[in-house]
Length: 350
Image 1 (cartoon, rainbow, N blue to C red):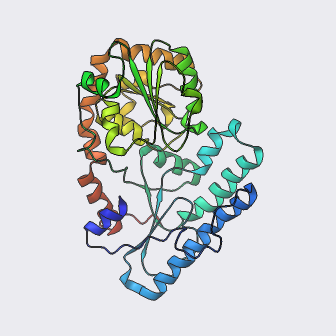
Image 2 (cartoon, rainbow, N blue to C red; image 1 turned 90 degrees about the vertical axis):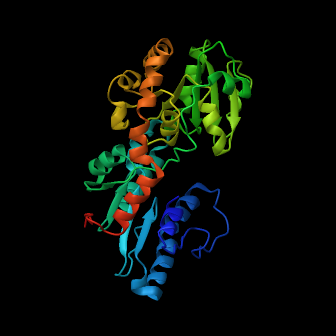
Image 3 (cartoon, rainbow, N blue to C red; image 1 turned 60 degrees about the vertical axis):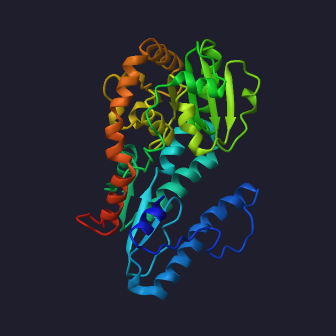
């Protein structure tokens, strides 16, 4: 999306990644510690390739934009340097402590986070994709940032109140409340919470859309329809079946599933409230924010609330569309990206 946005503004874009930066190994090692080392070295090879391009092209390069685990390699002077934070390894490590080994926790928090991710944003224009990440980067690294949000094609994710049609299309019961979960099986995404709630709410029919996994334990559960790797353009119809979306994240920047559901007029039950976007911290959506990922009673109460007052919450979700359009609509997002990349009134954070 970023590449298409920049190219639409007549920028020539070259993407440097693990596939074209000269990494000497052909595949990622299955040995844990060798794999860790390979992941760290990706930043070195990507940075070295970017530095070579800067030396060869000089001032014709407008900006060097990094994201994720790369960006720490020192680059020659010249182009504007930008780093995009989608979250921090420190935050993930802190909230996933019981699900990972002590060594994995220490590596993720201190080496990945406090060393490399801190270096990624040093002396750069720092962009973040949500107010949650803005707060987290400030708390963890002490960095000031610029908020750009994430892009969402609002033409694809439209309001559609014809649940009968969509449920017929997907073979979903018409006479039962329907919840939808779109995500993966990672612990910090709350897949274990979903499994527990499915067992505790036999009256609810669940649509489970898994990306990049199997979720084999749900294949024979009677109140579940399991779908894997659904094409992007089919998601609006699935959201159209649902009375609510479940986003039981322990931590996260700003879930696309959350934005997609709200854009389709589907209320969202989410956790934890401290990492929820600002517009879900007000009535009536604040009633659907559960303060802890393991508060199953809180999730059940929220499900009861949203299914007991469906019209209230669906109207409130529909009323959020203008907010989402302003924050994430493609046109507004594109203008915001160019303002930051072209330094129009933007602090460099240096």
